[in-house]
Length: 339
Image 1 (cartoon, rainbow, N blue to C red):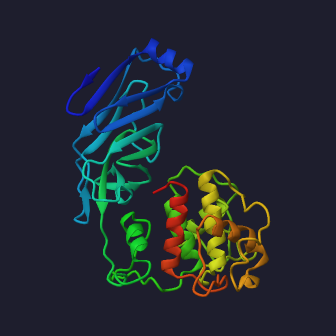
Image 2 (cartoon, rainbow, N blue to C red):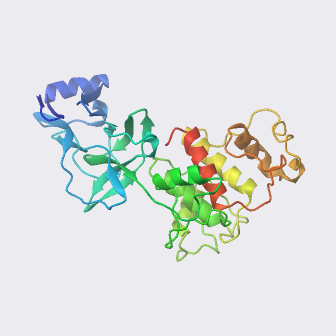
Image 3 (cartoon, one colour):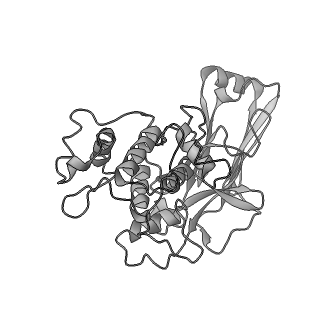
């Protein structure tokens, strides 16, 4: 065992690893500002006489842009022998990192993995002053704040949440530094927004690929629509069509958001229990809600994923705006502890 400068290396003999593996024990290493865990049963059998696991402070070699501000030193995971040491998009380790310099809401900080000559955003969970990152590989990681200013949201009702989601790099704007919060959002754009924040959550497809005639492989949203379909988030408007450029309605958006929430919770297919109309009677236009959307929209209201608009109206058939979509996406991630 060796600990130096907030870095810890532990050597395991073959006999010890075999015993830990047999009992299914989780191996955990702790430093002052980080920890790593791995299940011994995930290591498999090995002919190595000794194996070493290391976690702790390292010096990252890659650069980052002016819009990024580190709030921790880089932390590295490395292995020798039976411990995996390959850097990839996923792996068997769970890493925890303490935020050294808090800028207020720690949820706004992001975890990045050093990849090539840069840093790639990866998903994490925030627990007070600690970030938890699951299913990661060996490699270097750092927590940074990201700031992106849009010139057209300062006085908008959704400013706080749009700003938050931009800092999390869950939403993006346009090349002229606008966000255009009141512009309608299309079915393919909302699907893309949702799939982007779910693509590293380790979710499994529940159905095969689909070939919508109006979303060919050359379409910019092809991979996102296809992934959304495989995850069970979206369906076509017919077996052959998706209508990607049609503006999405508020009830469509709510239904897709509920499917995403259930998937992140491991409850795919769940809808509101009991009278699906009970929570919808508060809206003066509840008769305008499509029959197919009522179960999912009820759950969306129950979970506060979506709210009514002025005059106790739901306006289910009205088109959703980019600001409304961003708020709904935030609430899905908040409800599933993914911020």
